[in-house]
Image (tube, rainbow, N blue to C red):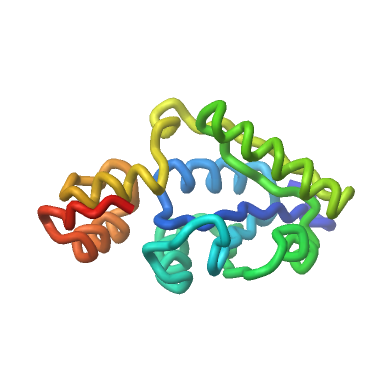
Amino acid sequence: MTGAHPITAICPGSYDPVTNGHLDIIRRAAAVFDRIVVGVVVEPHHKQTLFSAEERIAFLEEALAETANVVVEAFDDLVVNFAKRWNARTMVKGLRAISDFEWEFQMGHLNRTLAPEMETVYVMAGPNYSFVSSSGVKEIASYGGDVAEFVPPTVARRCREVFGENGSGLAT
């Protein structure tokens, strides 16, 4: 760690819901940077959320309570503006598959155009998380499947509450 000039990085996302893969990326980033600010997009424009921003923040705060250098905060503007508010010049993003790379490559260049000082660091998902996605978790839960191995306990419990023990059968 750097001491006098702490280095802050942001980990932005919708986290709807947070998965163990997300938590793995955040914790690994927290071991590299002095402070990680997990930015929860309030209302992502490209998808409808199942859980409110407040609930997604609570899931993250509970799961990351023992990671001292992590802060969780909602944002509803450009990610580069969110980063500037925290004096962060680094954005950490997780990559699971080639499809993630294509999207993140495009977004990285757009963000770099908007904020040339912003650097994006990509962290590869661990092999046991490379197939886990929030949309996959919601799909499984919607059909009554057990998502406990993919998400923190509180999220698994809320998925059962939202979809019921047998699921609603309505994939999200």
